[in-house]
Amino acid sequence: MKKNHFSLRVTLFVSFLFLSPGLVPTAMAQKLQDEQAADKITIYTNGNLITMDDDNSRAEAMAIKNGIILSVGKAKDIKEQFKNQPTDIIDLYKKTVLPGFIDGHSHFSQAAASIGFVDISPSPISTGNDKGSIIDALKKSDQFSKLQQGDFLIAYGYDQTSTTMTCEGSVGAPPGQCMKGLSHDDLDEVFGDIPVILIHVSMHGGLLNKAAMAKLSVPLVPEAGEKLYVNSERKYQPSNELTGLLMEQAWEYALGQAQALQNLQSVEKSFKDKLTAAQLMYASYGYTTVHDAPVTKQVMQAYQEAAEQKALFLDVVAYAVPTDLARYQYTTSYTNHFKIAGIKIIVDGSPQGLTALFSQPYKVPGPNLAKSWCGGVANTSQDDLNQYVADAYKAKAQVLTHVNGDAAVQMVLDAHLAAGAPKDMRTTPIHSQFVTADQLKSYAEYGFTPSFFTNHTYFWGDLHVKNLGRERANFLSPMASGAKLGLHMTNHSDFFVTPPDPIFILWTSVNRISRNRKVIGKNERLSVMQGLKALTSDGAYQYHEESSKGKLKEGMVADMVMLSQDPTAIPVKKICDIEILATYKANILVADTSKFKPRVLNCKAVMPKKIDKLCKHVKACART
Image 1 (cartoon, rainbow, N blue to C red):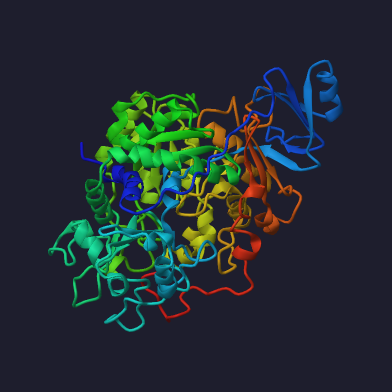
Image 2: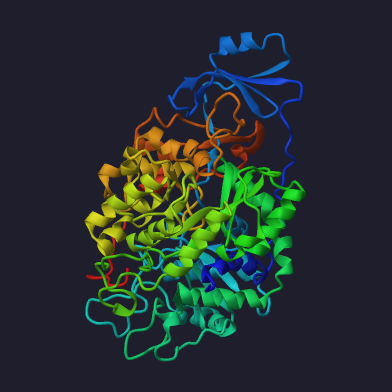
């Protein structure tokens, strides 16, 4: 069986922790105190409880003991029910309470990594809108100020498709054509011998300067016919030189080289040092269950040791790389807040990176102006995919697959059939952004639990219209169609592709508005309750946990998030102004968000009065 090259992706982000200086922050851990004695019942009253039960019922009070919900209903009834028992009564002052948010898909271990990286995402997330702002952010960063000889300067969120990005690399381009973004020359000019890596926003690539390329044994001019760099950007003819932007297989090669540069025994220590800070960050967004996939054996070992030491206070669901299938036992229950649920297989790339696999070509040329471009080569062959899926099903391991384009989706459907199409495996196609209507019906038939990505409608919706055409773009993450088919679906951030912000995810799912104020697929908008379901009860279903979490209901774990406003009671366009007030895990306060900064993606940020139109700098942008 061939090696799945994407098993290296998570190792990169953790191993890069040790290629950079001074990344361990001041201790952020707080002592978590149980807010109810073992023999005492906590009663929350005078609240607006959105229970997320099957009837979408509301309640004003809830009784909890030892982290488990005893009763939900009217305040007078619950007080009467427990009047002869020791109780603590807490007034919610009409605040809205939901089940704790459940992360449908992200890369939780990278939350630790990103603590020390430079964020060069375009606005409204950060300030990486063009060459000047990116260079400025790198030079002003703490990481840069602490560099020592041989250290890498690492940033994340690089997006050459940003509407404000100019055509820096277009020297010698055909008339009207544009190669947006930076090249290694732009970084070389400023940083010289300092190796610099700008991780692409898709996480399927990165921009390297010459120093980084040399250190990672990446040739400046690949040999003729070298297929490793088929998806990577080159300077316009007559040069065959790489711009430094490596994608897919070439990026994976660079990850392998980075892995070899550092001592993997240090992975566990640095990961644990930052684990509390990463959990607090997710908890500040209202998450009580987080997701990490794919996870290498080094990071998996770090998780297992953290669980043994009881260092986890959020539930962590981890998925191994497919080549490590035989290393683990797979379960639907937690040990000290940790479980290994299955494997994740990377099938294709990203649509914004033009590496998602489609049955019909993109509307724009591919890398290096390739014609009739359908996304290049799959990251996992059909034969390997068939074997991975069949072996996982035999091991009772849940299968997650990274798929964006319809051709990649079809590969997963074919693999499922080849493995005998077993029932209730809850196979989860991650992203599924451009699944077709017929393929969506197959999801329903096979009991798949897709995890969609409606944040793309905002960040790259305008780009998808240009690159794929209006019809395909409008069916991006077709959650309304999925709801009509009765699918259990989640919706996710894919952090650090986009921030781990469930309020923003909800906003994109019910509005589907792009940066340029265009609606991307009006018919695929969800209702607010459908959007909340994808962040709570259907998240529990995806993880085989629907009997224990995802609802405020008798017998369920008391995972809760308190909001500043009721999302069902305000205009949907104003949902982005809701703040998280507090997060409780099994009735233990894990985040008092008065201690955190307000959400970055508020309405003023995501819908500013002044907007930058796509490709405003050139008449035609072939490479956006």
